[in-house]
Length: 243
Image 1 (cartoon, rainbow, N blue to C red):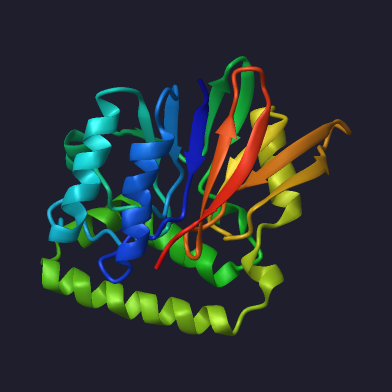
Image 2: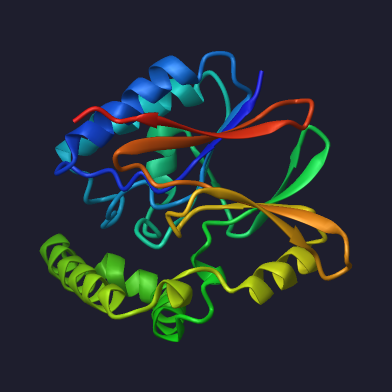
């Protein structure tokens, strides 16, 4: 038995090999597990639960099948924060707040998507504050689907252009913010995605005690999964994604 964590699959019709890899992952790597956690950016873009595309159907059906066997938890990312209750009803996923502390076989662990840790990217943080506000989400969902598609394409282009002009340091997490958030939640271990830089980091917490920051990888040429065992051992694994 174990608990699995994934994030940043960026599923989309334009990358069918990633969709196939995810469906194979569910079929082959979730046998006998206790829980599955999806920590955001599961989709490249999600325009709302009323804008489900044909390419989404096998993904939703597979999640529903899995959730009938074990708990599947979902946390919003910056790409799919418009996922709502209808998605949960269709898939059986349980939405988690960002951040959330969970009990993993007796160990308190902080889960996040990770974008809120990138405080040096002030432009993105301002955007995040504006677009994740409940009133803005209502306005977005009140738009027609074609309007949302156009806005999504515009924002995606702006994000890509801005990303090319920013340093890697600015786009990564702020170390001081990591330590403060861990102190605020009184945890030794944090798990997040978003940065696409998979690694297990050793760190010294604000109280002087050791800690860990585990960064999940994005699915591109490889898929990534964190496996957490009941005895407290964990491993960050990757596997090739066939084109």
